Image 1 (tube, helix red, strand yellow):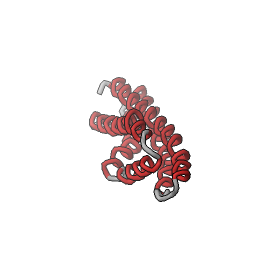
Image 2 (cartoon, rainbow, N blue to C red):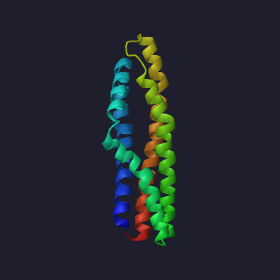
Image 3 (cartoon, rainbow, N blue to C red):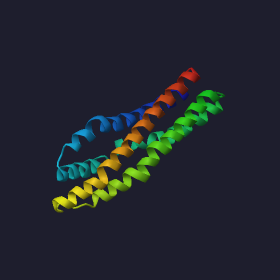
Image 4 (spheres, rainbow, N blue to C red):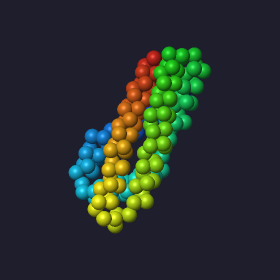
Length: 161
């Protein structure tokens, strides 16, 4: 049972790391080449489309699975692995979930209220308030998710699962 729990934990965290990494190295640079109106329209569309059950399972999975895995590791008498999982839990909850909830979501909500019918100067100002902060926060989420997956793998190796 612990093996499968760890496997699902690692996979869900890896899915998020992969999603954020893909944004960092391809989606964001591609969107960055668009005009202000096209950029804002694309981000509004992406932000609406990502709110779906498949995303939520991957995103919320580690929030529940990491603490559960940590508890099981300590309960099974594997403190080195449990320590790695505790670090992974804190990294994900603060660096991925927390950054998303406190940073990206408010930016997305503000973006959603923007009228794409505004004049070009207003659209440029909207983009300036959104793009760089959102990309910076996404980089934090990317690095945090990758660190989380790395720590889960180390925990698996330490526990001999």
